[in-house]
Amino acid sequence: MTEQIVPKILTSEAFAPFGDVIEVDEDRQHFTINDGFTERYHDLATVDVEKNNGRTLINIFRSTPLVQPVAIKMMERHPLSSQAFIPLGNEPYLVVVAPKGELELSAIEVFIAQSNQGVNYHAGTWHHYCLALHQQSDFLVVDRGGEGDNCDVVELDGSKMIATQSKA
Image 1 (cartoon, one colour):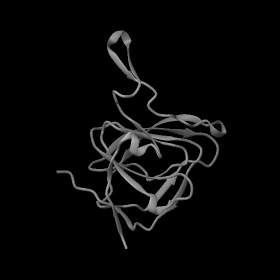
Image 2 (tube, one colour):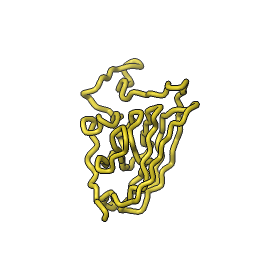
Image 3 (spheres, rainbow, N blue to C red):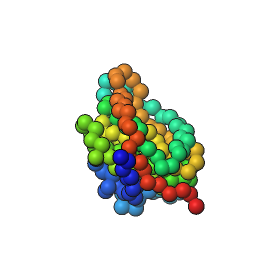
């Protein structure tokens, strides 16, 4: 039996149990720098990579959209670090998460992120790999390099589907 999960709008409040939303937000700390020509939106996410002498990696991931509706066939988590995805294009994308601890399929949530929103998964948060929605999309990814097993993957049967709409 399949279950359709309808994506929620990505907000900082709704995403807080899983990590940080990275976006320009006038309610967050910001200030002017560079002789008044730049507004700095400050400390938007907590990068956590230092366990087991980890180091920060900056990567670009290129994500190809899956056939819609998207079947959730796996979830992964990074127990030693956070992992941030910041879109480099102008397309929305899907974010699939579940709370830390043992993976509970009933707790999987799906968000639709806009092109001006990145996400930073807290260490141990279950998530699906990056899901481009309409076209191939690039993401700046900040995560951890170093020793230690930092990726747990659980294969799923695909019975949970993401209810998506095709781009008009």
